[in-house]
Image 1 (spheres, chains in turn orange, brown):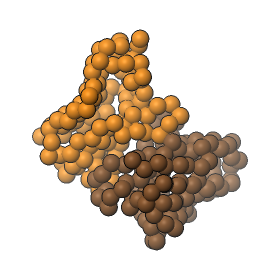
Image 2: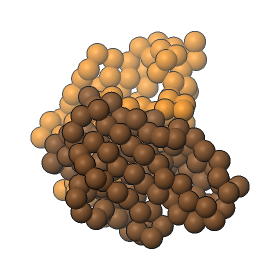
Image 3: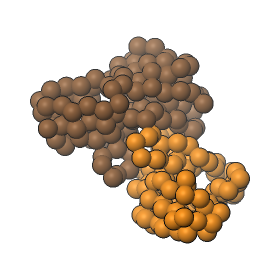
Image 4: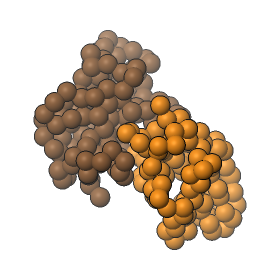
Amino acid sequence: GENVEQHPSTLSVQEGDSAVIKCTYSDSASNYFPWYKQELGKGPQLIIDIRSNVGEKKDQRIAVTLNKTAKHFSLHITETQPEDSAVYFCAASIRDMRFGAGTRLTVKP
Amino acid sequence: SAVISQKPSRDICQRGTSLTIQCQVDSQVTMMFWYRQQPGQSLTLIATANQGSEATYESGFVIDKFPISRPNLTFSTLTVSNMSPEDSSIYLCSVGTTGDSNQPQHFGDGTRLSIL
């Protein structure tokens, strides 16, 4: 089955800096790649997603890139703010969704 | 997107007992899923709740331990049976609004379950 690896497990940045989280997947048939943000005491919230026929997608300060050949995709957050602090999960999907282990992002004011 | 309500939001239970978690959606959805998130860990799919038929369970999860109901397109329940401390987790309901499994899923806020 699909295996998703996510790095780093923790990330600390200064407010205003950029943050990058990377994921790799094992099954080349995966064709849908969402990113979720989970705040303390809440369920995961979908923040951006990309399909395998697209290489990059951007939504304001958030962007996702996909390299199908290398089987990896990344989340980029620019101009980070303290409210970006949360746990971020990547996922890859063919028949069902497999999640990465998560990255705890801390943005220091 | 759909508004998903889970009940209870948290509970503390005695080992050997069972608890039923409810998931209510404010609109009809095609797909409903149940996940487990152990403390500080990622999400693991337990099963897909199928309307009008038995749930489809993932490897490592069985119906006797996690019976699931889905009587209509807006409601599902997950029961955690004969609980042990290892069942202490967050249980999350998610929904997909199309019949395609490769689609955005939207999550409820989860049920935080502690077993003594």
